[in-house]
Image 1 (cartoon, helix red, strand yellow):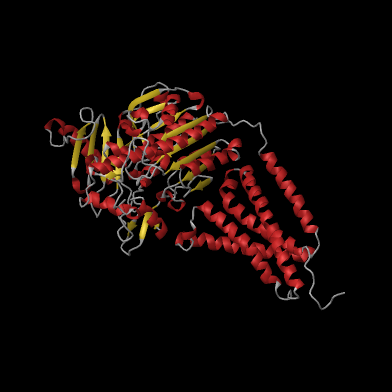
Image 2 (cartoon, helix red, strand yellow):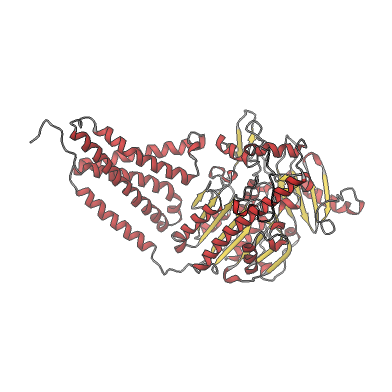
Length: 615
């Protein structure tokens, strides 16, 4: 017997490591599968099983590391009192890895760990993981000591879980509803898409999709600003109804805040989830962060996911897993086309040499440059405008190629025909028309006319073109009707499903398209009304413009002072005042962390941290 010397470590350290791994896996599974459990037991169980198996494996490695450290210390005769330290050192890598994975899933970059919106969930995660690890380690140590019994039990449980996982995803189960895939290309103006008349061959894959589906010739976005427009797309309601306008607002106390899509709104994802759809999103845009309310209804909402190649790769991975078993609504939001334009080198000169249009411009302060252009202190040259447009088209061609690969993968897997696919955008971009570049300005057509293509299952109504004007708020009720969601969706927009099927369009209420932008410095908001080939714009400061789009599609001739158009001007002005008076005031807002502000500044949405009042 060796009563006084150091004791050799037993298998209890491996047991403790397994307990630690199970604890980490339990926390990860709980966070990531919380929405899944509320959706369906099978889906939540699948997510939990995957996380538990993975992190239990990490726990075994952790236990082995702890065992090795303790064995080394024991051989040196220094084991007494060093066990807790060895355990802590061994457990830290596992905890750090689990924390990194969870933060990546939550859309939190490592640089944002100390920001207000990241501290709360991370402190909770760390506390829960440590508490669970300590509890399980103590329980395992007391129950089994140094025997190998817990390893055998863990192995049996692992086999049972793996078997359950395989059973859940066995092949041969048919879906009862069509899958729905929404591809939103941020900042895509309609007239740069091939089937909408663009001279350059920018979108051969989207053009092919349009040939297989239905194309809406004139679709009006709800705003020239992403956050407002997507809030309308998700809810089917106009901006004045949901009240989401501001991406960054400085209050009287100097706090920078952002509008929140509140829970009183019912989103596209919520409607589909209530009807049994698995709702998934992969998003890249700082204005659409989970914290701003856009995750409502999504079983999994993954923001800050990078550019289109990574988003498509993650989506295809989903297709091989849960997407095989459950009918899904998937929303993919691509940021690639957003200014400043930086296409891949292989596409940069696709349509000509763009030169160096960004030379001398600090792209980290792109928002400040845009403000200077809007204020008149900077005036881009014709050479710059041409270069930006060539880069824009080159980037669009790159995004189109990525979408083409995704669609080809669906075809190869036999899933293209059975999927309802939507392609659209939140707004366009300007290249000097009306004296502006980029977006978030007055709702001229280059900024509010976006593509809308719907490819139906079995390619029904392939090649059909709906010539009548529609709006982005029509997307939710149209897609809901196309897949047969019962009970209605309560949207302000109009379902265009009857027109797709060959019926008559709805009444005059559906002929009016509304585009809104937030007020600036206490002035009233900008609003655009488009109806019957007439366009009315009331801008900041009360300036009015009226255009006859049939004769003047580029909106160059202002008819506001023309006596021939006074009756229409009065009618549209009255509608604009009614809408402005009905705007939702006092929208809920939350603080914006500095890292998100920096991202928005680089995208051109705000001029600087000290003056973030540009929507």
